[in-house]
Length: 381
Image 1 (cartoon, rainbow, N blue to C red):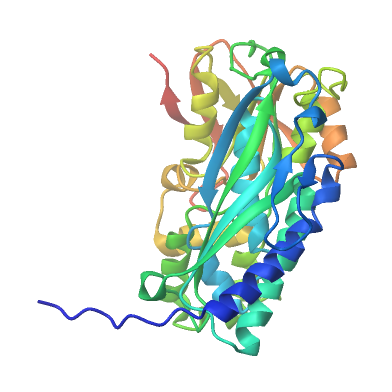
Image 2: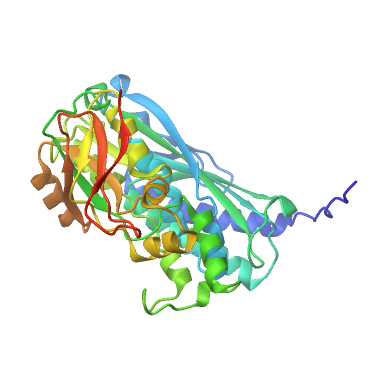
């Protein structure tokens, strides 16, 4: 029988200090939606609630929760000792899932599991960075942080270096039935607009880590490959996920029927695990239609580099990472969507259209592409 790892003492005092730091940071997000959060008691142990009167026509709205976590991208932050952006990955995974069906995310709660908390400058600096990212990401997402939990789990949590953690979150969202994106409004002739993602989103990172270890060794994060960039590999992989939810909500109008949509949107796909074939396929399934992507966005250089190291075919790469767009919008008004995206600092382009034939065809821009032949990934029967 194998021996159990020793059980570590839980540092209650430092745990309380960390909770207070994150609590103070969360209060800085309440002005993202003024009037939504009510503090029933001002003390640290007080209670916060959400004001139902904040929502117009609240009785007509439908409620739901999106849940996800950062996954192993936290190890990159641990390697770089830079935790300032990991909250962007955390929130993007849940708020960008919420808008896929026409929902509007408005509040976030999190669970931060750490190996242990010690009374050192390294620990408190890491938590301060997490809190800084917490506030900045919530602003980008247009949500408030209403609660959170921090737990010390000892050897149940591993990682790189001395400060190890996992981070998960839940996003509350609402949708008005008249603005739900079911996929049934998608029509032949609609265009697809890709919203560019310039780094890895928070999926497929295990393959990234394996590739970097294989090619560059244990301390790969500090290596600079000047054929790729003047920045260290760890910085390229750690680049935070773009949060699209606030922009997409502005496009659709969100749950508030008095808020005028900026463009007509028939569908939204959040391109994470499974890549474009899976996520666009899910979007199209209710309509039975297909898509031809004939002018795809270029994948990030670091993504194609990892693909080469791992020896993945383009079909495998397109089924693992976004390979260019972090989100895809189906719309009859592509020029309007592109102009609105660029006004918000999001690179966008028309990448394809909904054809007559019910299949998904994606022109190949992966690392293995040696011609411009479109590859058919999925056909609906």
